[in-house]
Length: 609
Image (cartoon, rainbow, N blue to C red):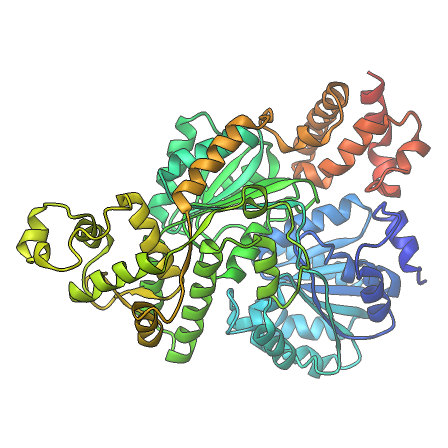
């Protein structure tokens, strides 16, 4: 028996209407079409294969790279009354056998499977005996060697088109530039499929980018102002820094946990489980954390160090605000980050073509950090999308940065770099420019240079920012083959600046940071929670908190994440509308038939109380 997509959307998932291009994609797949879908995190990608699988009958097979993601999605589907299971290496043999029996008996609507398990002859042979409605390849960017998260086993998924030629396939990802898209299509043999590209915009995320200036204090100010009670992720570049920041946050009174590949497996699992199932937990992590996390109420993502590329940055910031509620991203950056990442590229085992690509990606991110333009416009342009007007919801829009003609300053900096032999770092170069009387300056005779003392119009911190921006613009680069000193980037560009043929516009970074801090102090402070800013009044807030406590108790009894019971958006709607009957509650977005039957009465009692 088949069902209309709109009926499944309403009865199973509790939504009255589709978002964006969902309906177009779902109709295409239900009618047997194949597709590559690019849709931002939180845009509703999973419905694009879950609904067709339920409409077509048979069993939909979802290939997913991470066990944690499978587990959460399967549990969420079960809460909706959907017959779902996951087949992966984490299962005990008895449990795996039970799921295989369900597959053979046709008792599953959706099967989640890891790519390495799918590719086993036994699994493929088993699926050939079943009625398969579709194959969904999630996180499809993993197939691309040009992407930011390449997984070799994804390259073998083209076998699906050979062994199941009549079963439609849909590949989905939140992050892929044009070369990555082309490689996904080629490697998965989707040349005859349609490409659906939704907007990459995440308007509910507010982007903040700041030069590092006492980063711990910057982080603490950010958390206390808007996120004192919220769950979030703090990314660091190294394992040591992860543990250091997690411990420091704990000392400041936050519920913070470390996560990185060097921790014992049990510790990692426990920390991830606490983040998923508890409220207000902060995970401090390397990039090993997050891809498999389906938690919709992550209210902030902080980068204490620069990520490797705009794709990685977009993917990681996209883990905030999947439920559509206001959320924040904060990126702190510095020249030392660029130097470390460039060193990682040069010391890596990739071929020269790959290294050139990674250098370009790093340069693009450095340019994004130092730009004075609207953050969202810059991000979307990177992915080939145009935003006609500034977004009004990023730091550049809210606290416009001052710029100045930095051509003369750049010429002084370049002259100093050249005359000192292109082998010294920012600290020594600044000493020369401001005319500092240091032993090292005298040792190398740099107090005799024409550039000695010519930069006294700027402070040391301002020169640090100037050098950082010149590196971001590629006018200077860090020499990783030597001792980390600065040297000319492109000789043509650097010399054209020196000769006055190229103008250099710089942002007043330190001035900007101070102005912004003053503006934020003058602004009305929130009470430490993004959710509270959305609710209309104290009474709604009290009801919401009661409902959240009830949700947490139910979730702990079932040993599931709270958000698989109801999302925050649904709880907020209940708190605001105060339904008195099951019929009224059933009209709230996110409450389908199964959840209404399971939880309707208990939540109505809580509202009445």
